Image (cartoon, rainbow, N blue to C red; front, side, top):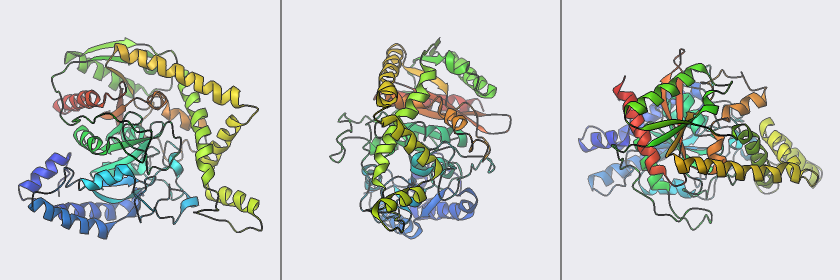
Length: 477
């Protein structure tokens, strides 16, 4: 079976009688069978269930009653609740746990006849930039299996790139959808914070966590976003705004775009990624977009602000995993020892590092010095970001400072690993939407991703310019 780049291609083949959803599911299950042993992208695969659902949807298609996502085969990151299915957050502390309900965003996919084919590998509790923090082993990059797929949604990006599913639902707290999308050569969309309900998403850092989308095309990302977005009675923080028709692109519109000199001049930026950004700048100008150099004075403060605040929120959110109520419970003689042993045995090193860092930042002696100060800096970052986006429609930057690095290369150096999030965390700190789209490869054939950010709830225009860029790239092949 050929590789489909978008759901519209799939649905055209189905309409022409050349393809059924059952055949498509069988194809993806074969891809999983042939590749997952090497790539470790899926932790659970729901073969029988997917095949049964495909038969139902094929009948709906015959009756002209199928939903708008009929033919969309989706994997979900192992941080989403899916009733009566495993939810482990790639952690030993939840190994064997099954969810009692389904996340709102997942239910909305199912309601439009998408098929969930399995749960995908990730960094434990979504904490990491390489997928090497999973308790079930790292996922691998299908472009080069000696390299990481990125994180934390590494299994999700690897699965889409390897055609084990058509799209994936990841989560993005500091770049966890966009960075693996860049490493694997696919599209990664982080919507505005609150655009999609977080009900059923296992919490890492609640004021940063965002439901994200990984896909082969901007078109599919737009359609999935449209289905998942909107008000939800189970999430008081979700936006009440009307959901636009995201997939209806305005292909002729011209925009004003900034690129940040601080990102292109950063000492950690790979020279080939810089060259790709400059190439895109010229392409956009040739296409009559207005592209200008701009400055962002607080770039060096974003990463430390992000890690202080997310660690603090993680310390609070992960306190519920104590061995008493669900998940792993260590054998012990008393309650206090049971708590300590359950958490020390159940959590991996990176999760423990962030819990301890966050607990320290929230402690009475250091609360004002770290947590309060980081909150003030976050507000300043948001203010400067919004001022920039009042002047420009979009801000262009690299998605990542490097292309995919070798497995094990940065695992023992947390600070170097954290720097992989250098360009992505701004969108999460400010709560704005951002997207990573593939734009070329380096001299080793590894994908390069470019990132665009825009003001809150401007996803429609963000998807439009992204689709234009993909079109430029395809025309120049």
